[in-house]
Length: 262
Image (cartoon, rainbow, N blue to C red; front, side, top):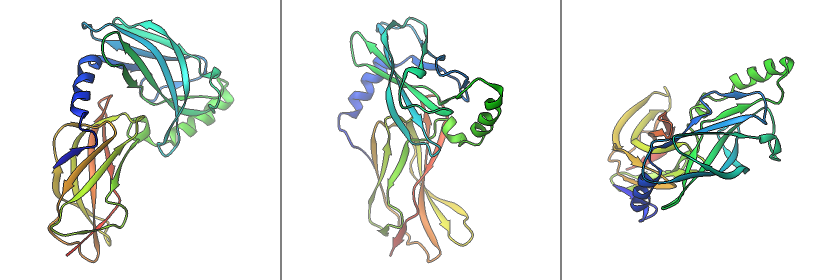
């Protein structure tokens, strides 16, 4: 059984689909690396519709090696009419609090003259501290060692319950909490699968599909599940969450292991 944190979420999703459908951040591309913080370009595309749209802000986030995104500032403000395609140059060198080399993402604000505003997340991109060849090689090596899941936008989502080592009762329904950060690219859940792991061999096996359907997530989703069998002494349960990002990348997230008592 699926429950939302907000009863108005269906109406919000419908409004977003109407007013925000057909627009996307097409650049920076995956694995894009910019040699100058002052020349970072972001491109927004739009399929023609009846809703007049204007780009009026670009926020910048830093992303650490663990996939934790932090809002820094609005890096660009203005009023840029969006017809079919718009490319803006964002000067990050004017934003205080940024360190290079680093990895970042943009949140683009698109204003509707009638209806709610839209926010779009760019793909993760990297910026070097210098264009000099001596530093570029070292920075390229550092970039190569970063988590590839972050490049794909697979961060900012967590299965917060059951908690690590928590005990559930067999045959009794309990909640599975899924939390999404506002900076996450992941916005559609396609499956929540209960898994069991042998703590000796570390081999996981699928138990059952708790949820298998397309479902948008904005901030929080709660799913009810029931497990009939208690976990053996050398085993534990965990959940595998599968879904897609705004950029159609497939991501997987995993809960902490927990136990089921008879």
